[in-house]
Length: 125
Image 1 (cartoon, rainbow, N blue to C red):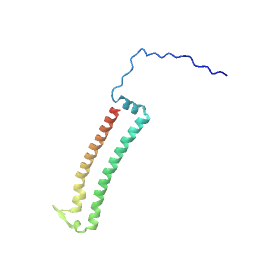
Image 2: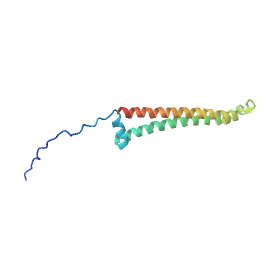
Image 3: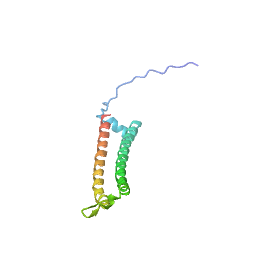
């Protein structure tokens, strides 16, 4: 058995111009085509957003969980009145909501910042 060499192949330039990719086209293509790199970038964004959500929930959980503990371990705090309202009612019924809104606004800003950083990363690759 003799092994035959394949014939010579002539390679020519195509008649059309090569497509030039704009900066970021590679990263966006990776996301669109769901390549391994695109999958890695999406997972990275999801991980960052998850960590942000966990941190925000933890802060709210500690702050809101500390109030009942305060009233349980410091009974004098339950008897304090501010502007005619008992302190527990004032803290849990009135002051908690502006804190929740402020925390939600900060969360949305940080989440949007994470997404913009992700877009910059995609545009660079």
